[in-house]
Image 1 (tube, rainbow, N blue to C red):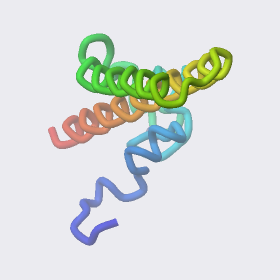
Image 2 (cartoon, protein in one colour):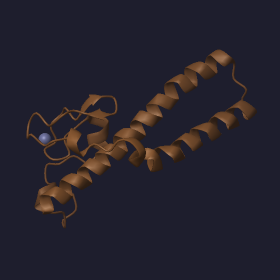
Image 3 (cartoon, protein in one colour):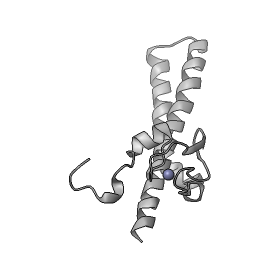
Length: 123
Ligand SMILES: [Zn+2]
């Protein structure tokens, strides 16, 4: 932690850690995710509401569209340069696409949640 960090950020997990391990951005307790990319209703430790602050629908397009374009580009490049058998493509993209999309969704949702919590506590 940097010396200039505020007292409010003590004990809080970083955004990537909160997204990856499902930690509450306010208190660090587990239980942020009810589904792979959907918040639980609230934190069981501190009571921070998660679902009320969840970004959904079109607000996530700016984060997802570039990722989808990159995945399509990677698929086209791989098909042109490596020409894997169909069964390998099904296994590769069937595992990679959901993992990448859920990872990006988790990261963006936690980022938005942390910003909303920080704005809420400042008021
Ligand atoms: Zn909490």
